Image (cartoon, rainbow, N blue to C red; front, top):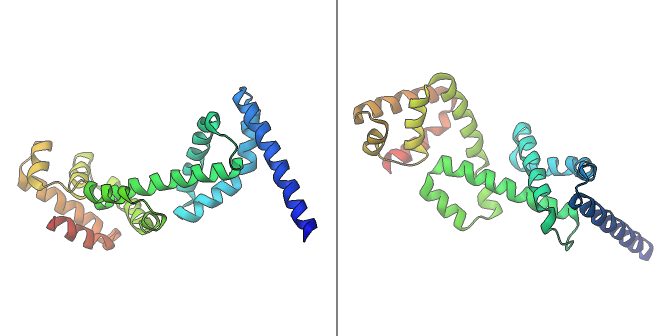
Length: 205
């Protein structure tokens, strides 16, 4: 037992020394040092993010964003935790911002502000299904609807704006806005049928 504890302590000390050396070299402008950090941490950070977002492409993008943020944060790193733990903390924040952004789109700005007031892990990860629906929704609209109609759809269902307000913003009649929204909903009816409840909720808002 004592031997195992001593071994863990030695490994921790070695990791700390390695971290300090990396940080010093990065701060000194040694680009190779950051490449070493990237190579050492990327697999674990990617796996950490993939487990949370469930999509390989999104995980790759968010992992890259994590390392961008890590590079920018080296001046503020004080060594109170290991560099890997520090990186996981950045990855967690990157994922949190990702889910909050998707939640804002799906539930509207007012409800999204409420989420941001109490951003727990459970609240963020509960939006994963909505995020996947959003991705399917975007693909269907981009393939079938012009930008002007997609903007009308976004204002109604992402920003929870009234038909009258949207009509004023886009320079169309209220009836034209209603027609645009109806056609967009028809486009989504087959590809993303789960959105029906969201549409109904927004219509009552």
